Image (cartoon, rainbow, N blue to C red; front, side):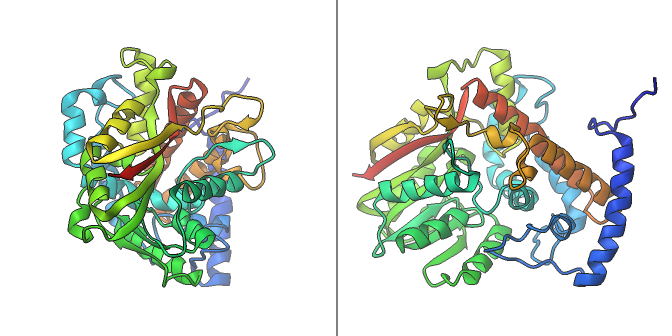
Length: 405
């Protein structure tokens, strides 16, 4: 019996060769037909075309990170998580957490320079998870989570709202169109500012929806006191090395009585997560290294940080509390689930195909050197997220509503 030859990533070598040939021919054809152009589109989605999108990951005219710097950036990022997945417990040690906290700005900025295109390619413009009801599509669940947040925050067309850690602004644009509020998003990443504002213009809402570059650890340096009616954060402040500092900055920006609501990533000791359990720690550290996080907090720590920052917590619960009931599709199902045409790229098989594509493109010098490392990083953390979700050790959807005192 012949032995199947695999790459270090576990991909059959013949598949690599066939994909090399396919992509080589396809790239030539695409270049001839389209002139090699990659066009941003807020409605049809920029990376909707597999081939023109694939060859443009980490290498398009909007990119801030130059091609030759991709490899150095991913190497520097991975050094901050030295020992992750190899020596369980290493990145949870105080010294390692402190180092990432000290370098958080570089860490988070580098992370989003590297992964923003991958996120848009596989996920869309809203970089978050959501509780999902049976009969509901993935995108319907994403928008429902965003609209629910806007309703609980009481956003209206007369309000000025702050999006804390907005990414490329997918949720911001959806919420703006839903309630007609004036929304300002803030992100530390220049590339996301550039792309997000382009999308706002494409949708004709740039007068009521814009993104500015800024550090959400230093919001008082960016915005005047009491300049917003409400604020929200969707799976963003998990990147913070000091939530009290972040939430205090939000408190500075809000008018008295203003609502701050959001979704937060947390581990769940209340459901069995144990910091002394090596397997639980392995999953936690895998999620952290694959998502640019200093360290994951608990529900109690997040709520205490809100209170210590001057907020009254009005409501808080895991929006995925019914994750394994007969009425819901688990939030992590898209990462592990069965094949669907629309969600193919998010599935395990879809991610494998994307990895083969990226490997091929890097081999052909079409994709920048280091692209495969980024793809591997995201593939590994997808498995950690699925494990954390299946065992209810982690949720990306701790929902909270707080009011400025």
